[in-house]
Amino acid sequence: MRRAWLRRNRKFWVLVAVVVWLIFWWLMRLFPGDHSWSTAAFAGALTATFFAVRQSPPVGIASWEEGAFGEEETAKQLGHLEREGWVVLHDLANGSANFDHVVIGPNGVFCLNSKWSAYRLEAGPDGRLLARHRYDEDVYQDIHGKVRRAKAEAAALSERIAQRCGTKLWVQPVIVWWGEVENGGRLVDGVGVVQGKRLAERLRAQTGRPVQGFDVVVACLRPGRHSRRRASDRKAGLSDSVRGS
Image (cartoon, rainbow, N blue to C red):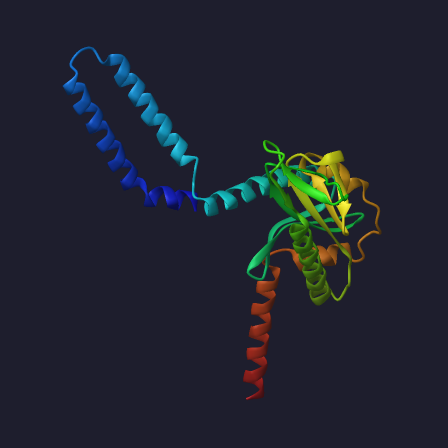
């Protein structure tokens, strides 16, 4: 999305740069003399502006980009668990949305949602968890909408496992917050809210029962398997209809 946005606006930015340069050249002609220092300063300012614009995509694209940053950092943390035998699946389809990360370990199944944020999570006056902006304490947001979505995603993942494997499992919802979190995290309405850099240690410390049919659950959730299975089922159905005719 960012690259497409840059390509769409490339000619416009080049045109603006040329126009600004011509205006600068015209001003130098009006005031003759040694302008070597001003030319260098102008070239540096123009280059800095160009790079600043490149790093400032529209809000919609910036939101997706920040989400990608959070998911990449979460994947790095989960890499430690993968080396210990945990199974980690990233970006699984969930209808028109997705599950950011699904983690299957010796102590349960976890559905993770990554958030990259400039807000610090801390307890409010009423004990509820608030996200307060790190640079302006008067700016804050209630994260309980995110908590509800995390619970809904975990419920959807549990239902998918039940449909595909015939096994009903509890899936623990987790919000991975890439920002400051008071005390490293807490449980909010059944949802684990964890500071990103402490994710691996927090997941290891969770108490839970071993996943029944661990390998079967992993096989049911891995991408690609089900599309091949559906294709084979269609072929089998076609063969049956041909035999029946």
